[in-house]
Structures are given as C-alpha cells and as structure tokens.
Length: 108
Image (spheres, rainbow, N blue to C red):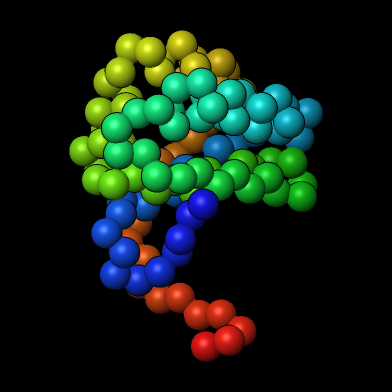
C-alpha cells in the first residue's frame, strides 16, 4: 500500500495516460496485468495505485519505487516490454518523477 508523506525515502512517479472512454477499462486491465505479472516483481518496486477518471479519458498511475534507478531499470528489462506495447496502443502517456512536498488530512 502506498504511504504518501513528506520526507519518505522513495521515488514517486505519476503517470498520466490519455485514452478514449471506450478504451479506458481495457487500458486499466492491461496496466494491472503488467503490474501483477512483471512490474511488482522488479527490484525496488514499492506500490502502485490506479485512478480512472469518471469521464473515461484519463488513467493515473501513482507508483512508488525505492530509487529512481530501480524504476529506470524496469524499463530496460526485456520481460516488461511485451506488457508495455499493448498499453501503448491504447494511450499516449506522460511520466514524471515527483517529490511529496505537503500532506494534510482531516486529523492534522
């Protein structure tokens, strides 16, 4: 499970996938399959959370890794590429690394 807090020693990546409403469920299923079958087994993987927009046009993947280098190594792994190809057919995605700089909840 993702823990979102400042000062945490993880690399956070938020991936924004643009798609069509008719393809959103298939895209979500392919991302889940990739995580279950290969990504979660890679060194440094911590967690993934997927969010599907109500209008069907976006899927947001909030992923945490121990280090940025672990995330980058996953992309060079030949076992991962066959899972990314079908995802790429349904979307154009944007990947970006982030630092958590502020957190607040109802109790704080």
